Image (cartoon, rainbow, N blue to C red; front, side, top):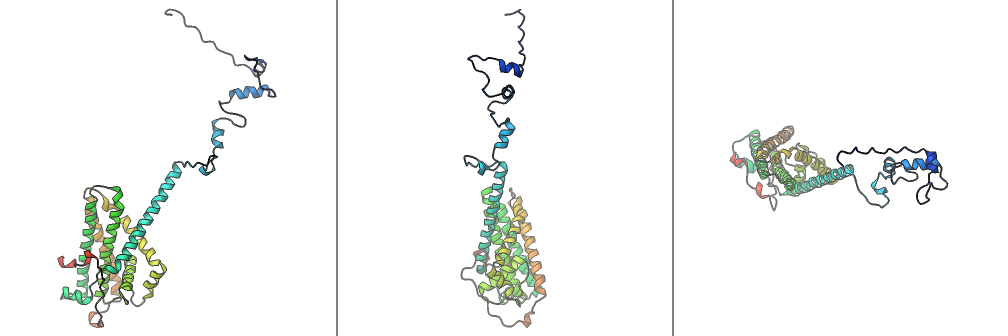
Length: 314
């Protein structure tokens, strides 16, 4: 009631073990038979639920199995670190599968790339020397790859993460077809047509694209053995992985990726052409010293976007 002095709290004195052992509890219960007073006193200080052989939370945590496979019930509950490892592993497997898919598409499209022989090129661009004709081819291929990069960048104007891998794969496949056509026609211009049929020449151009160098026509085993042993596909995957990493800025939204993709693709194509031309110049055969070569075998189903010469507009 108001005005009264609050009662003081009663303080209980902690009993000693000797007193606790002699105390009689209501109902006649007392210390467990066979236990010493010290055991009874120490057990009273343990947390609730801690029995014999346990000493609190730390002991309980130590008793838990570290590996989810070692749990008594066999349930696997991976922690945060295990989830991160699983995610990284799945990402790596997805990237490897994507690179393999792009490599298979490039190998499949290589025999379908239409290539103009030297007679056709000289008829389309009369009066040009070897270097001038090579410059014309490089300029046309660079403009074509820049158009592909700008188109993919424009498609990524609004970011759609699930579609980004498909956009990268489409860009690399299209650029690779244009650059394969460029490499094949540069070999024609410098008088270094690889021997063999359409499939064998396509394999040689694939090896030149992955290595970024010209084909050594005096050593056909350098690219034929690579195709048989699987080394060509391994080199293609490495080249595709480098291209995918370099082309990631092309996916920047709001038309920024379009400009970046055009500039980067033009630069990469020119860099590839410079390396191939530097290698071909060391083994160049003048036009007047070339033997009469038969017309090139054309694919039965050529790629639609490569049937028109890009240089006529430049």
